[in-house]
Image (cartoon, rainbow, N blue to C red; front, side, top):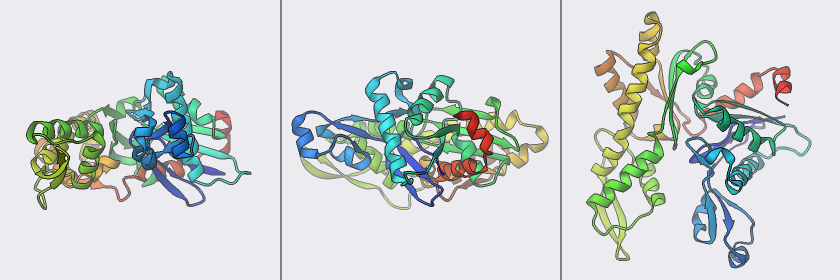
Length: 334
């Protein structure tokens, strides 16, 4: 029996009960024509390989805001999502005689039809599937199920969820779409405005953010080579990177304030002292310190902890959920 968590707008990760873990960029590519097919010798490419060969491919990023784009109504997008799920399960190396039980993390407030599209895509490749809130799975994996506030920063969405010893309800969750992709768009805009003649793609910008992303005071200047008329030219992007990453802070603070102020007054201080920062966006240097400082200014106190494994935090928790669910619960999902 294999248990896993998958599906992210930017990266898809799996943690399996055989101890294997894998992550792949959430890109799927199909050869554009017979020449591309001859060159690539494959019918479908995934992740980094798909990105590198994208000029010869119909490239898909089948997930947006943590769910299947268009809720799977477009046939090729749905096929790309199904193929991505099949690939990440293949990388977990289940035995042929094993049943595959999958727990999939989705945004906290994903709509019913969005969850159905994920469910339908996954059912092509697994024996049983359960969908749970991504921040809930992070908290579950760390055994922090009481008086904890989880902030999960993905590519498409940032999800906040407060835990108080029970399954979270809709009122315990906040979701907004200022996340990794929004930072990339803001950084692109600032580079265009301040670096005349510089050529770049959104993929280059994403790489710059992942390498240098920070808020607060920089440990060093961020000098990046970008082509100008075909010649690599150095640009100091320190201020642009800081400004772009800083767009995450204000909506996170508003979400924290909403969840704290509507919580039982006796437990508000406790909730503020256990704020977990998770997801790929949590790797922005200085973000935990900046959020904690803003909490102290606006809410009187706050303690923010960045989780140790931001890429696998949701997957680790989902695996634990899969192991803890009784057999009869899975049978109801068949």
